[in-house]
Image (tube, rainbow, N blue to C red; front, side):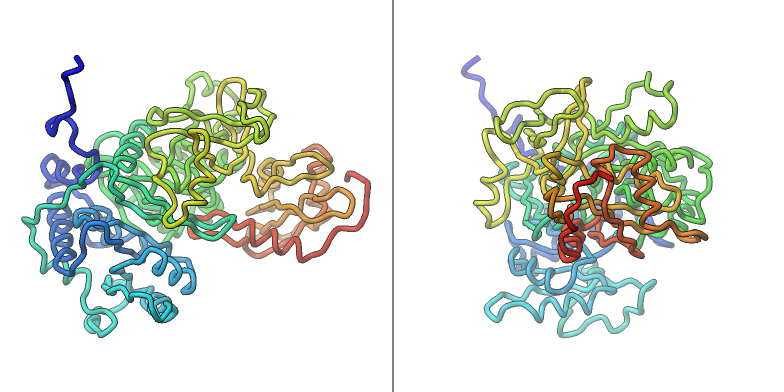
Length: 553
């Protein structure tokens, strides 16, 4: 046995890029990408990606170079998930809601060599380029044109020497894509959403991308040739790995430039959509849309990104969506914990089903281990559903580390675990439930309060559209819950602060009840729909310390 060793025949580097080669062979004449009136087959998509990769190499892009993309969910964005690493380069998707200063920081930090820019974002990216330091290398800019946004007749300029379609046309369809030397070669550079701090550059390798892709398909039970609607931004953790996953199963990618609930319902009807993903805010927008109506056929929808309130899950499933819930981070490349559903739960009342489905769940089959550890002892917390600790993970899809940040990398990799920074509890049945980000836990009078639990009650209020709870300094208790809410449109009698507080008092322990309620037209969010609590914390802090008051509401 000891003489048997790995060889080139049994140990080629794992990479999800080969999924496109196979899709072109098995599903060559089937639709791969649909966008408005444009449809590409898998054979066409394969050729376009190879041609684009060939042109990138001609531009001087080499193995290990970073190529950035600033675009919404359009065909070019999908194709670049293959074309950039086909050229040996590292793909860096930048979220399209960032301001020019932050984009400039990312381009400088990543040392991006080339940036594909959607025509609708041309001015913002040019501003970002102008903010680069004098000694920073200016990346080449390539314009992605779109006749549905603006005419493309004068797209070639000094700032944009070529267009996306121009590179596709010039490329060689017989190009042999550049395979990784090892499966540990970097393939992806993603920046965190910055909900609690400045964005960090997360590096993933070919192996990790392969593992999370296969794992995500198996865990969600995605069948062959699904019709997948891109309501989740591809720039967010590479669309939770589904750009490569949909190629693996020969599905159809229905692209949509901007999320609009009315448009989404129309696309579901027109194309027979079977699968889609989105943060809980997407579910909330679908259920509150005046265009919503019961679906003719069930649509599988996978949600993650923030703990979803049970009330939103209940309303979403009432429309005919079949909701699956998972948990992941930019640092894991996708979802590696899911609320694995048990058939016996189907016999429970709808509200109880929604409560169970709101839990994050158990590790997927591709993850080695998951636990909740006490921050002081480092030991596993009790499985009682109430003792909180930090969620830790171990598995092949965990990032290589943070780019140019050895200190940040070492802080989250300790004792053989990846420390997520998320606070959770473990239930007696082994299911994880996230309670908060560690920075969002409210410590009031020595009690650790979960802002997520308070928010889940606020979401049951018939007038509340969005809710977020943060800590506000308190002279006596140290911190007290401060609720920020937006109201549903069309509400005739808007609730007062006192009425919202009284509603909370009737539905939760008194020590958890917000002492302050702030009404806003809309809560600040990241590009992926996560509410930016650090912004709200600053507002609450600037409101001043609440007066000395020993009463619990």
